[in-house]
Length: 260
Image 1: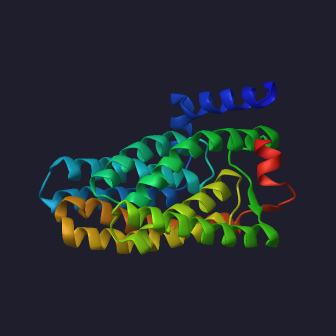
Image 2 (image 1 turned 90 degrees about the vertical axis):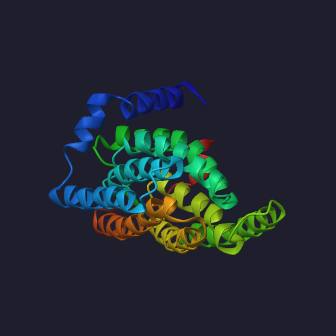
């Protein structure tokens, strides 16, 4: 990483974890954002109370739910500080996935953890160049879209075999999470609006996975199940925002331009 890139990354880290910036980005949302935020946060609290267990798993599910929802609302608006909450959420979510033996989800969260830092750099670079408060929405080219589909198929096969070998649960659904996560997170990192197609698919799959987990594990994961529904609702809202705001064409190669 050259000096310029290092400077951008350091600036991004400072802004992401600056309390003043966090407060500013949380207090400049729209009325619709606050309404959705309130409903989704309330759903987590209600699910926690209804679970009636209040054990370690329920407490972790509540923490993951609350932090993830704040993260998602900030992603909707293209705000840099989403990575602050995303980093915390990813760590707690990994613990939940580990305790429920969802191997694919564990791989996904590990990947998300690394991508939080790459995302901080990429979004800070975009914000510095445009001098805006929100990251730019980009259109993806057809070749890159096809490449994403091929990459999904290859990674899915690898994760499926690995999950089967490790004795994972619900492996055919669970194995799809990592390839979808890799593609969607990359698209999100570099501001592509088509990321939301991936997030919607991930959330739909997660609704099924956590419903099945709820049936076998019990009410301690009720909060996680409700969180998947909340995330799915938010994904449709986020897609609406990103596809309706001004966008730019994709004229850059993701890997060579940003990581090279």
